[in-house]
Amino acid sequence: MGENVKTQQGWRANKWVRAAIPALLLHCSIGTVYCWSIFSQEIADYIGFSKGATEWAFSFAIFFLGMSAAFLGNVVEKDIHKSSLIATICFALGMTGTGFFIYYGGQNPGNVLALIGIYVCYGFIMGIGLGTGYLSPVKTLMLWFEDKKGLATGLAVAGFGAAKAIASPIMQALLENLGEGGIYKMFFILAAVYFVMMFVGHLLLKKPEGWHEPQKKEAGQGMLAVIKSKPIGNYVGIWLMFYFNITCGLALISQEKMIVKCIGLAGIAGIISTVSAIFNAGGRLGFSAWADTMKDRNTIYKMIFILSIVFTGLVILTSGIKNGEGNMLLIILVLGLIFVVNAGYGGGFSNVPTLLSDHYGMGNISAIHGLTLSAWAFAGLTGNQLATWIVNTFGKPEMHGDIEVNPTGYQYVLYATIVLYVISLVISLVLVKPTDKALEAKKAKSNS
Figure 1 (cartoon, rainbow, N blue to C red):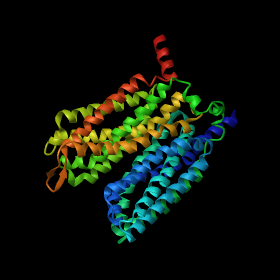
Figure 2: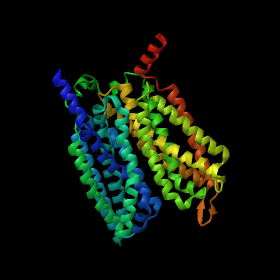
Figure 3: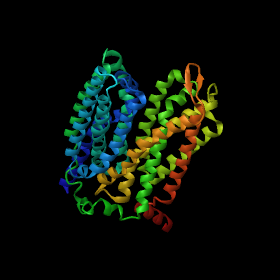
């Protein structure tokens, strides 16, 4: 008895060092993938290609993040030390290789080899590091923080969301102070810094001794058998909710900068971008911690979709993007939409592993979570492109001062996202069934 108490005290004492801190070190490093917009134009100019051509590097990075998570989920399940080391090496190697091919492109402007090299290094190699690095700490956190799983995963995933707000000014400073070739030098410097951060996280990351032992029988069932233990529509519903939420988030976030300029706030666009990144991180932590207090975590998704539908609908009805300039009420409404979508986008990420664990148990959670992250891969290829196609197809560019914008096009993006949010809400209500815990709580309440 006394030994068990001592062991549990050890768990509580070590959960920050063995789970929370390494998770933040890993996620604050790989989350800088979202800083792409900070330097994408500089890369394009330096290697002699269009910005549109270089943008595919980011899309490939998100795609391979999701696909590597889907295919390497079993590796994470079996050995977090192997997976976190793979993440560390691939992420740092990908950044170093990207720096090299940017340098090569600068020496040979317009050379297609430089562009392909950036695709391979930033997209494929770094993408593998992103997927394995994203997954590695999640189950470990849920094991250490068994009673507060949402808070734990929210903490790590918030690090992924906050990375952009933390790293953006640092990257901007490096670009401004490294002189000629600063863009490739920045990648070499950051590759070294993030390798050290992630390697320390890799060394510290550890599952609690014996805590996972009761799950061995469950783990032996295999991932697909566990998914099939409930109606397949249940898992399909979770996957689709996750996919649509990311697609809508990326569609709006990719146009965020131009929407802010439309409503006359071009001068503080950088500040608003930072605030929206904070809402993204806050949504990851806040929504997941809030879900810990609920009998059914799916309730959080319903709230995210309802809030997104309400704010999107209000901006559509008021034509807030087109009429917002000079109208304080509409400016607040449009900013509210941006912040709510960012928070809901982040909250969708942090709640998916805990929602899956509530439905399917902890035995194969890394593998099932990894498979679900394939939704992120496909959303990474469709979200930005959907918004770009809509803006290029509908409305006409017009000048706001010295800035060319397309307010009608951005409004049409909202038509697409509100439809997807409504579909997501229907899915959460119809396909995703209440967990056993939620049903038991409902039965106990009715009996009382």
